Length: 264
Image (cartoon, rainbow, N blue to C red; front, side, top):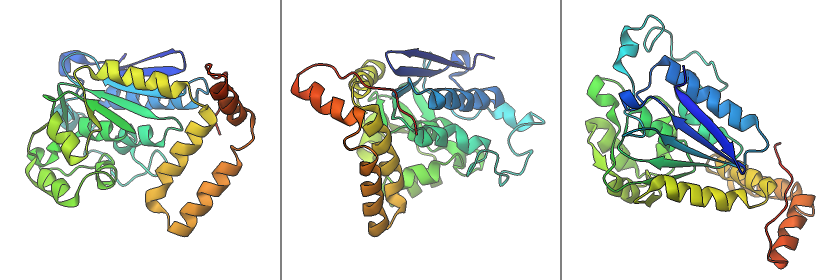
């Protein structure tokens, strides 16, 4: 239903939530479209970085409350049923961006409420306008954040801030989002800055980028011993291989790298 668009150019996939008349609110087709888009770009070795954004006035206004009157919508099936590996469908819409082998950069404007906030949190790096309005909105509807948000917030936002915002569904600004740790940078033009960074990342060795994200994703869950071992194993898979040598040669010769596409 064209809920999500995907355009791929110069190794960059631009994924846009595309329901602007509803501020990209999350109905069932939107959830399905987000997951399908993530699967598409994740399986494409030509994609080296993803930019995630929303069409129209907002990044994402959160859950479409019409889901609760939909026979196949939220609350109608057991949420504990795993449909996407470790996740259910709702969690996968956010978690798929963290699980992708390549970096994801979110360009956020307007609002990022509830499920929209959690989808944003799946990105590696987030640009946000100072006046964007964000909220852990679920408490307003008598719910808890359950789209992978508790796991994603936990590693970047202070515990007491998470609790206050979850218990109160207080709306906070893009400037506060950076201060709290939800977002990375304030930007007057998030899409422009996201594309600039994406272009820089796309010019790096895709092997090293994929391995770096793999190690960084795993690090918060590993012991020091296991983390050190993972660094060594993944570095052994990179060092002295074609893309690593090309990174050295292109840097020394002050030219753009000519890298082979890579997926594990």
